Length: 473
Image (cartoon, rainbow, N blue to C red):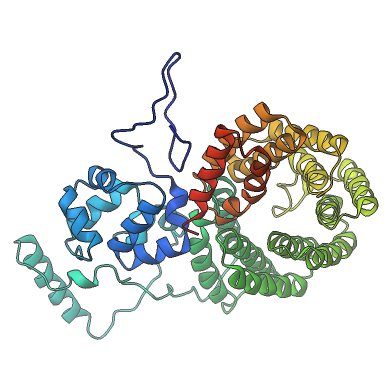
């Protein structure tokens, strides 16, 4: 049974592996729904395109029919271009496939709704409110009594495009509310990927921007501006995670402006770090290095040793990618020294994540990133990345995928076939459960490493699963 894009059922001891699967896996991995073209097809309720993309990742027409409760002939007709308009059928299809209903305009996403549980704004009655009440009552009576309505074709369209009216005055509790929501959505991002919270963060940014116009003391205004800067920082990071690179850059630019205006150099340095990570991911290694270096200067001025350590550790990764061992070693040594001396208990929320796991991971990945790494350097990479994974909890699921992938690659490059295969299998299976295009992109080195084992069926199966996972990007 292939690892593929689905949750694997535990295999009983002594069970015989078979190539024929009469029913197929019951759960389609969440990552399938996060691909750009798939999201467009879902939003347009273009089930033909949805089913075609499912077929590309190995989901048969028969399997689609079983999950959605449709007959095989109905699935065939959809693939021929027949539109599905009935609301109850669309809901059944979404639920059967495991698609969040909000992706098809059938409901609000639960994560978005929970994250944006804002206080109800006091609204003055509109002039036509009585007429609206009459119209709604008439509509409710028609729907209740089973009289057909003519608005089915518009169900996928959003009803509410407005931002709730902002209060005229804000205080400390409003700032703390923004910070609490940012912390909650940052935790969602760490655990489930940017796809689980990006739209909610963007909506929250629009709301908080209004609060800057409310009356308040100068101190509260400065604190709200800083909270908004951190929110833009998170919006940029979540956008980056789902492949919205231009949007991410715009959020980061605004965040940096606001952090500097609020005179918080620690946050400014953190934003520059995230700018560097975006460009490191995009293969612009020297540009990434420049962002890290700007961040390091800012971090030093902030007096936050933990932020300095984080920037130095990421500099080491960039130096490894460009093959500068001398500078890589210097950056690793300084990152370690700053980390030991840092006051981690009083660190700001945006840098508090950088703990021993992240330091070890950065050192290991820096060594592993050397294109001509020696066996000794790969052994160092394996040692440090292994330590990082020992520290990781389930709340950092995306980081675990990144580090497992890097560890598998290092093992395979060293010739440790068994360990590399086992870790690679787990990494690919986990990547399919996180709503993050970045995790899928980071599987590329694993796919490349598999070329050393062209005659190994198990490793080639893993490579094939990575290819299938990437086909709908």
